[in-house]
Length: 104
Image (cartoon, rainbow, N blue to C red):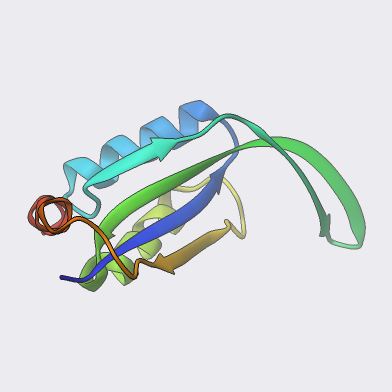
């Protein structure tokens, strides 16, 4: 069983919801957890920026990770979206089976 979490930051909850709906309908992810807004401070084009963003965690089968990253990037409003993959070392076997079945 190979399941990964894909962490992504969105401009707002509406964007996270829209993209989440698409990638789940396309079976690239089994689910998305849209989290509370967070405050982000980062350097962009020589200036320090501070904005409110919405993080989300998507779960998918490991073999779908590259496809999911590409799809999110293509739908995302940011020029350079933060999209990272976190490996999962241990998880409930029945949950892994569900993720792998839903993201195929």
